[in-house]
Length: 207
Ligand SMILES: [Zn+2]
Image (cartoon, rainbow, N blue to C red; front, side, top):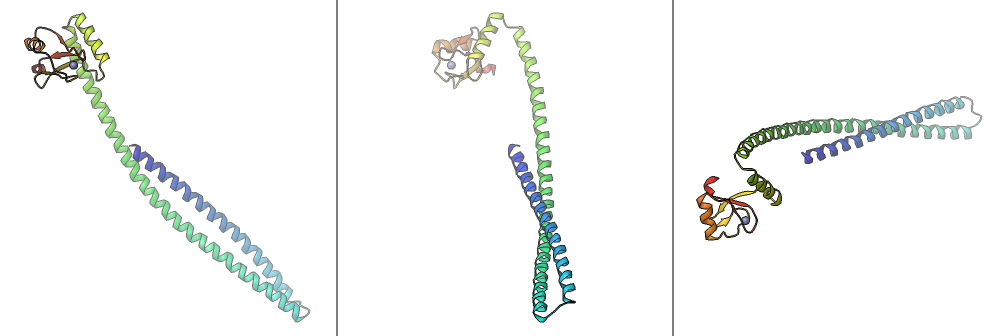
């Protein structure tokens, strides 16, 4: 889930970056449109001047200005065209990203549902086990219960009762059990505590 969330965050950041780029291209188009207006005004002015020229030198100079303005105008138009194309391309990228985001979000929702189902069934299982534990606790004397709780708290895996492991070892710490203790465990009559880890060792048949 964390990986999916990270991926989604990265996709959203990418979307944000593309939106900023589109905004920049939009500004460039506006600037160039303003340039076009200015060039058109100058062109109109020069054309008007051409109607009232005094000599051929002035004619050449105005024509030169006209030519320059015409070129500048073409460049501004070219930039507008390029920015429009770039925007169209970036919008396609955005659509592509939006589709990817949608798929990831669906994946994430499915994972969330899965997790909630797991948590739900764990809670159910826990309630059942708690019920069984309460039933057992009722028939055990107080001293033994408190010893059990104490052991549970003191051992790292919280298993206070362990079976004999591999016929002669403690199922909690795996140290060897003395033969006398093994007999006691086998008899099911005495509560045998492991001398190494303090856990209650029981006949594996109880498992
Ligand atoms: Zn032990």
